[in-house]
Image (cartoon, rainbow, N blue to C red; front, side):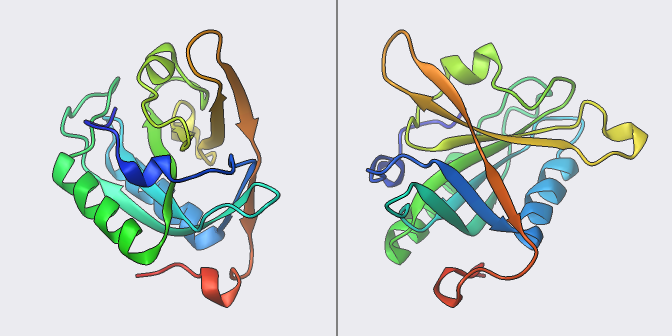
Length: 174
């Protein structure tokens, strides 16, 4: 859970229908979330505004600190959220996803995730470390919530991991 609704997330008009990232970006997310174990980890994922077909390309990962230090919940440090929001606004990016980990449950939205989904335009990018001890790559999924109020629908969003680089104007920005 993030502590407040950021305007950077509300500027996405076109719903994200697919998410593209480089293998290096995926690995950065996995490494950051793995480092938070045994607690849930959190990061914000910036994208360029989605294209007309709903495809969004990851621009930058903003690693966060879970101030709850809990294996069941997360709240990103508010100062990190504000800093990321300012950088996204300055660069014309939008909040494409909120990445977090599940320590011992699948890479699907939990009841808590759905109840606390305060950024409906941003995807829930979930990494499950449920079976990571056996050497397998953690499960990884992205989810979009459609509709407001009840009932809402949850749709899985395809993630495309590119072996090369993104277009020059869509590279990982450090």
